[in-house]
Image: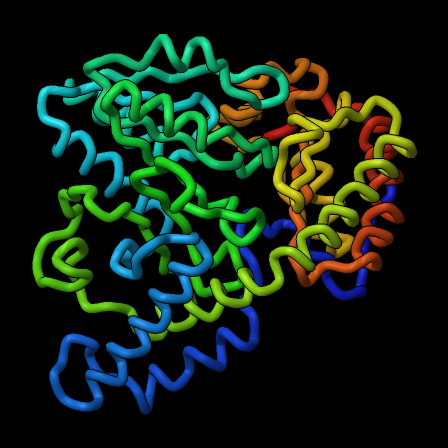
Length: 397
């Protein structure tokens, strides 16, 4: 087997995992570690300066989400906290309703809390299946809605495949049943236009580090008039909806990241989609027995998931890593065996391809040179792995 070793600059195509922080975001954050360090809750002038920075960032996130009011945005530690807050709050507030409707392909920060609520007997959870393209079974969804439904929690777009769900229509159906609707839009924000005013979405989660912002900060959109039971109790920060001293530096950086994403959305995303499409077309042309995963016509512009027959994705990732190409797989080594992701299994990917799925996810920092590098390395890597024919059971040895 060929050993790939490269001294070339990294090609980073794992942007659905996290993005590099934009230098303009870093420049915005730095003063809040030294000169503008004061607590935003303090009444003195230094505190007011910090509070003004938080307010400005809130306005920038509001504009990104097309929210009607600035007060509809509360800052959190990220998508996981936002998702947990929304789900637990809805269940507490909707007294007399104890059912949650979600999909089988949600992020673990949604599925795990639903699993825990179900095990404890606090909720009945309906997990709606998807088809081979990652699209929701709408008939099963409507059948699951009832007078007992407290909350529907559905992702805007899947992090592995980029498949988008029709959240506007799903929210309408949820409201018809008297249920609240929460959307995990962590992967969608900054990649597709979001205009919460034109939807019936009650709560929506996003995270800064998916749009060239810092890690450890996110936001939860809460439609005006929607009651919220806080996850964290203590001080009166965020209008009493999220206790704890604000991370001013991260919040200010998040605001700039949201503003930048909003300003370049309509110019950069078509360019990124063209790069993604070029990579997809060439992979399918050059590498036999490779299939795209997900709906071609309804996915994020930056995301491509392709599965290769009789190839272990982790072995392929190792070869690409040696060539300074960063991508990700939908599998993980656990208990001595490869376990394909719940998303791929739910989409019924053929067994011969199931462990060979690789995700390429772009950002505005990627270029044609990156695609050319991947196409120079990937076909040979797949060929060599197939030639070696490593047994599946030895993949995690």
